Length: 137
Image (tube, rainbow, N blue to C red; front, side, top):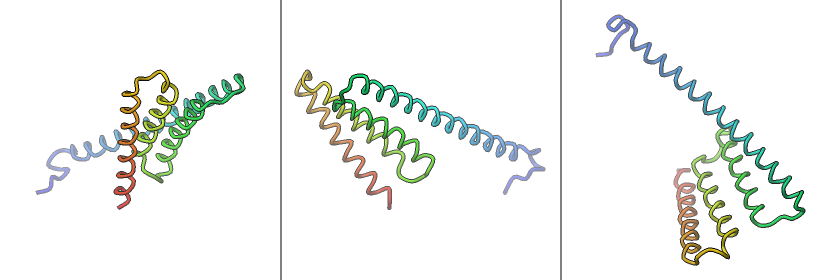
């Protein structure tokens, strides 16, 4: 039997209102944090570009770092556009970060660690493919 407002003095409506207010407040906080992430990413990108200009050289680590920044911005854009799968972007970021780690520290790393990190990249790539294939259905 449904509960009416007369039986509980409006507590059902109060619960709905509280839920709506909390969802709206959390949405505002989420959007604010995403804007902050975008601004911080743009600032970090600017610092990196200035560093490259000052050094007058670009290396593979710099390029991979720029890809990391690009993927973070893409993750924020996916949230706002609703196009794409936002949960795949952290996987792409992890793949790029691991690749950057291998490139930057590859000569000094134990070969076993390189194999483990390459295996992690392969596992993440498989996860991304599975998510992209089955999430569209």
